[in-house]
Length: 100
Image (cartoon, rainbow, N blue to C red; front, side, top):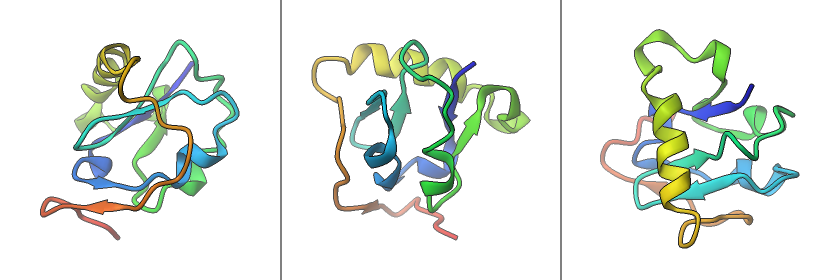
């Protein structure tokens, strides 16, 4: 099983989660973060670190966000060369950010 970054991260990109990931499986583009399902070891270290509660175990992804599971796989594969992220960066709170 893997974890999935979902809708709350879209345009509301915090990187607290990447700093605790022991396998460095996070990737990013301008809008959000993605988890590579091939590298994720399901340790759940990232889940409590997300201030917008955007990360879910694949089996627990809310029904309205199930499309984010294949999206994470697709985007992380595309971003392998340019979007790997391993350290916390400044947060991005765009107009669509719905931080709690």
